[in-house]
Every structure is written in structure tokens, then in C-alpha cells.
Image (cartoon, rainbow, N blue to C red; front, top):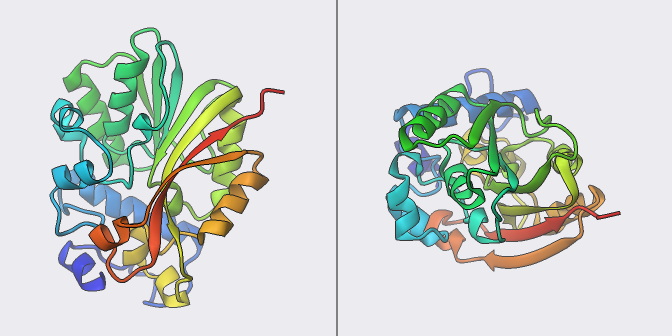
Length: 270
């Protein structure tokens, strides 16, 4: 895995010695730099799937050929699932896409909610936002807005969202408790959240947890499955596990015991 990431051009943060403890802001800087380089085309992958094409990654995690062909410029081969396929998105819904990247999931959602609905994509990386906004213009979408922001502190009004989607992004956030608390805040009563994310089945070493390459590849910042689910419960969400993809470890993360977990979460109606 480490050698594969090196081949993709992922570099270590200059201010962080390999194996040392990275503070939250340093981790965010590493993620922003890495995903900014992906948006610019300077590197082709976050490192988790260097042996697969973008189309192959998309197909392996649940996207149809028609999805990929509809929005090819937005498919960067990132993600660990297809959150837009997990639950029904109805016309008129307001959808929030956490870590919207080049806009692939946002565009799929916007097509479902129609002109009477709206999709808000939030991303902290300027290069990704620029790419997403250009893609939206090129594809002719008028019901999408891409906002710069941190998913730990969402630039979204409380109680304004019908559905949240998140695709392999929360593992990149240092404070996952804050992410789910923010998600709960912005959802309307009875609103739902569909999550695809990487969770660990075995503990990582301290070196692995603080290795920039592994963090940017969605491994180093991932939590053990039980810990991840507890954080969600603590934020107030009942949890429905839709699917668990253990084979993703063999396809994209050789050498690590993990899975992609697909979840439906609902904010209480009371």
C-alpha cells in the first residue's frame, strides 16, 4: 500500500516527521493538498485504488455504466459506495453532499430531485470546488450550489436538509463526532442520512494512524467499526446497516482489515 501511494505521487507533509503524531489541522492540510492535486490532475488517485481505472472503481462500488457515462468529468474514481442508490431521493428534496469533490454524487442526486429540488455540495478544497462548479455549468445544472466549508462546521442552516449523502469522506475528518452532530443539526425532523464509509476491523498501529499517505487513502483516519457506530448513536441517530462490503479490502486496500459500510440514519421526528 505504501509503495503504491508513493507511485501515485502522494507526499508527506513537510512539517510532519514520518510516524509522529499529526494534529488535526495538519491532517486537514494533508487532505486538502492531496485532493487538490487530484482535482488538478497532478495525481490520479488518493492511493487506495492505483491499479484500477476510475471507471473500474465506480463500477466496483455500485455505480452503473449510465451514471459514469452521464458525468465522466466528475467521476474521479474516489469513494467506497454509491450513497445516491441507498435510499429514495424524491423530487423537491433538498440534498446535502458532504465532501462533494468534483460533484459526481451531487449531479446524480440533482437529477433525481429535479428542478423543484436542490443539492448543496460542501467541500473544503478550492480546486475541487472549482472543478465541481465548472462541471455544473458544463452539464447545465441550475439546482446545485457548491459551498466551501468544513464538514465539522457546516455552512448550512439548521433543519433545512431532507437528505444528506456522504461517500468515503467522514473517515478523513479528524473530529467525526462533530461531523455527525452537525449532520443531525442541519437535517429536518425525520430527515435521513446515507453514508458509505471505511471502517476498520482491526486496530492500526500509531504509525499507520499518523501516516499521511494512509490518511489520504481513507485508511489512517478510519475508526474501528464499533467505535464509529457508537459515535453515530451518541449524535442521536438510530442506525440501519444496509450493507457491508468486506471484499473492498482485497480490491483497493490490500494488507488492511477493513470494510466499506453503508448506513441509513434518521433524525427523530419528535
